[in-house]
Amino acid sequence: MLEHIEKIFEEEPIPAHIKEKMEECRKKGMLVPDDELIKRPSHIEGIRKAGLINTAVLDEVGKYIKEGMSTQEVDDIVASFTASHNAICAPLHYEGYPKSVCTSINEEVCHGIPSRFRKLHDGDIVNVDCTTILDGYYADASRMFLIGEVSKERKRLVEETKKCLEIGMSVAKPWGTVGDIGYAISQYAKSKGYSVVRELGGHGVGIDFHEDPFVSHIGKKNTGMVLVPGMVLTIEPMINVGKAGVVLDAYNEWTVYTVDGKDSAQWEHTILITETGCEILTY
Ligand code: MF3
Ligand code: CO
Ligand code: CO
Image 1 (cartoon, rainbow, N blue to C red):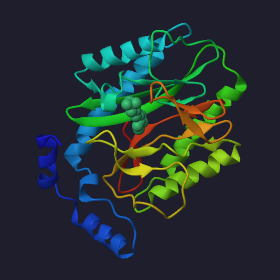
Image 2 (image 1 turned 30 degrees about the vertical axis):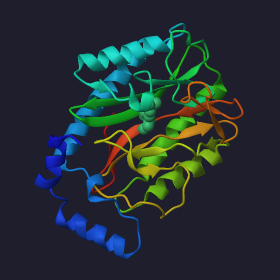
Image 3 (image 1 turned 90 degrees about the horizontal axis):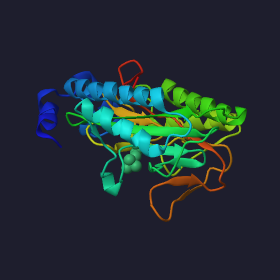
């Protein structure tokens, strides 16, 4: 961890009333986050700034993305816009990942790798997942983009997946649990006839790319880690039209596909658990 970030943990302790509630939860047998998962005001300020750039990058992609463009061109937009704002694309070289952004089309669930050989076609739905590092702080968000004339089935998938994210955020509250989020999302998705990817999920974020807790998009109410004010995490449901199962690309070992080749969509935000609910840091 960067020194200026580490120092803040000592300079800005967790408020006593929050520590007390954490202790109460622990006594009740709930899974309580480590103190390092509770971001302090200066950390939050830093993550917020990373979030502003992250949002601007996705806005920039939205201005230009269109039919005929290659996913490499999307990568170029993300890389150059991010660099020009003195920020870094977290994906590049992350665990060997070769590009600056993920671009996942149609039956690709996530971690699609940009390529100059992969063009966006009329009717495609594409997720652009962007993680920005600024001054050591991370913000992670993704959106779906519709290319040209998109079928009503695909439009519905994209809209209902966005609704899944919104529902997940609406139940993300202090002293609730991570399981509440997955429960709400999976109930809604199932009610619309869709399935929810289990193998991948949201995560703590802010000081590192992927921190605890894992945020499953299926789940049981009142289970898993308790949500404490100051926690920063992503919610990023991957919703499938067909079966929930996924397969990993055997050649690039990154791209995840639906097992049945049917469509999948995803939306992601980075959120802060506040004293009253949650706040989106990637708007
Ligand atoms: N941004 C993705 C997430 O939401 C992670 C991408 S990892 C990468 O967690 F290496 F593929 F970029
Ligand atoms: Co994420
Ligand atoms: Co992401």
